[in-house]
Amino acid sequence: MIEIRNLVKKFGPSIAVNDLTLTVARGQFFGFLGPNGAGKTTTIKTLTGLYRPTSGSCAVNGFDVHAEPVSAKRSFGYVPDQPFLYDKLTGREYLHFIGGLFRVRGDELQARIEQYTERFEMSEFLDRLAEEYSQGMRQRIALVGALVHDPTVLIIDEPLLGLDPRSSWLVKEFLKEKAAAGLTIFMSTHLLRVVEELCNRIAIVKKGQIVYEEVLDASEKHHGTLEKTFLEITR
Image (cartoon, rainbow, N blue to C red; front, top):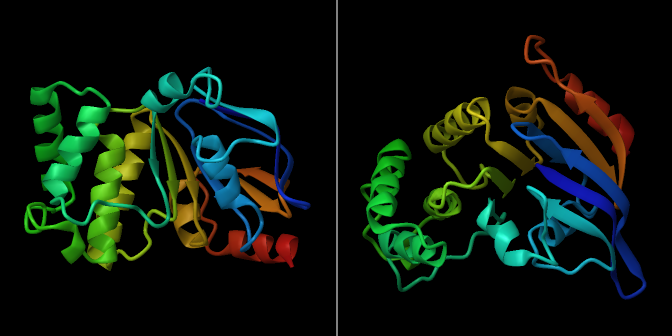
């Protein structure tokens, strides 16, 4: 699970996140929404340990991300909106490198790479240098890299960025299955139709504060009602 308590993040006099408190329960597919500049990415970077909070705390599975960073990071995977890969490594080499950082046993790592290669249809480019990759290829490799250590929490920022329709469908179906199997997913995206399709709870953030929360009933078809709500709240 994810616990953010009274989080404040300032950059000089500017307040990017303003006393934000949020809990995401185990197994929940959570959508974190807001307009540009609302504080979404800053919240995510603080939650994942890339930024230190000005005040407040972030915890994943009971581990404070800043006081116990190694234990916290072993329990989650993170995919940023602009994933970084080492251009002179192939996708396969990158995944072996990431698996080594998390001390995944060799046979387990190999099995997971093979499983995900088939699932995300990566065999055609897995052994090419990352410098040759399109944005969509990078996104798929980064997603697999976030999963090779079998985390219980996945934090993703714009997971469908740059994906063609086939790749987007593959990723969405995979995330649905993992959420149904108990993976906690924290997703930030501007694609409201994807949120309606995937998430069972949302929060909208504006000027660094949560201004709206809703539990989405999977049995109901929203058909764009979230877009209307979002535009009314954030205008």
